[in-house]
Length: 258
Image (tube, rainbow, N blue to C red; front, side, top):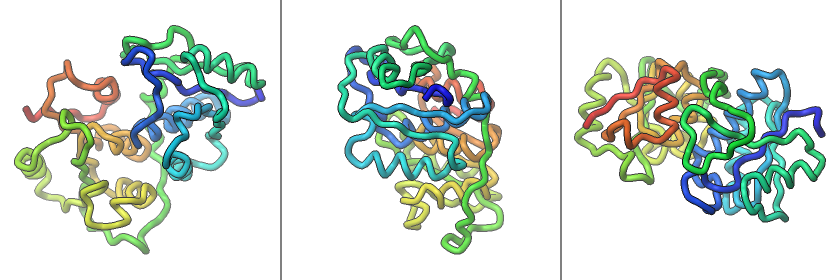
C-alpha cells in the first residue's frame, strides 16, 4: 500500500473551528483531484486520495466519478473511509495510516495558510503552479462550436462572487471579436450546462475562459494556459479566496470591476 502516494483530504475546515469539511462544491472536488493528479505527475507516481464519509455523501459519488473521468486513467485513485468519523485532521491521517497506508500524509498550503491550517503534511503549493492542459474527449458530435469564441460562466451560489448583468455586459464588450459560449448553470445547451466532459471540450477549443471565482475556475486550470483564463471580481483583494490569490500568483488574469 505504500507503493503509491497517499494523500489524505482534510476532514475539518481550515477556516471554521471544529467544522466538518465535506468538499461541498464542484470546485472543491475538481481542485482536490487536480492537486492529486499534479502531485503524482510531478513525482512520477499514482496517487490515492483518501476521503471521509462527509466527502462522499449525497450525490458526490457520481460527481467524484465524473471528475475522475476527465483525467488520464490510473493516475488518481479514490479510497473512501465510510465507517469512521474523524475527530480532527491529524486523527484522519492517523486512521488512514492504521489501515495500512503507512506513508499517508495530510495536504497543506504554506503560501496562503488558513486560520486552522494543519501544521504537518505535504505542502501542495507548487502543484498549483502546474497547468496540465489536458486534452478533452472529442464531443463535436454533440456540440456545434463557433470558429472563434470564448467560454463564459457567471453563475455562483455566493453573492459576494457574483457579478450583475450590467457589469457582465461591460466585460463582454472587451471580447467583441469573439462569439460567446455560455457554460454552467446559465447555459441553454443541456450538454454545456450539465456535462463536465462537454464543458471541458468547449474550454479546450476556446480562445479564453472568462468567468468568476467558481468551480469553473478550477476546471479551466485543468485545460487552459493560465494567461487564457480571465477571472473577474467586484471585491478588493482583501476579500478574495485563497484560490484567487494563488491563481493571480500563477499567471491567471484577475480583473477587478468594482
